[in-house]
Image 1 (tube, rainbow, N blue to C red):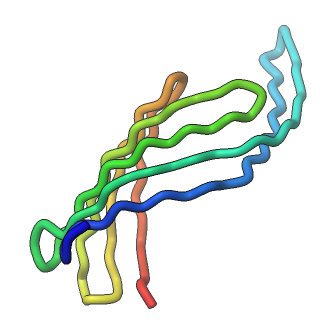
Image 2 (image 1 turned 45 degrees about the vertical axis):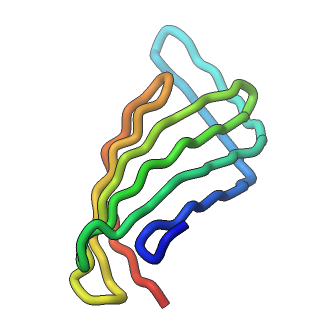
Length: 101
C-alpha cells in the first residue's frame, strides 16, 4: 500500500481434535476445515508496528475473530509483541517473538 503500510492475507488448513470430560459428560471429535485471514500492518515509528486482522475459520462451524496487535523492534530483524483476539466464544491475549530474515 505504502512504504510503511502493508496489506496481507493468508489461507490455512485447520485441524481440530477436541476431548471434553466434565465429570458428568464426555465428548470427543476431530474435524478439519479452512481458514482465511486478511489484515493491515503499519510501521508507525521506526520501532513500532501496529496491525489489525480479521480471521475466518470454518471447522464444523464457522467463526470470525478480530485481532489487534503491536510489535516492538529491538533490532531491525527481531521484535517482541502482544496481541488481543476477540472471537465468538473465546478471547485470547498473546505475546510473541518475531525474527525477520
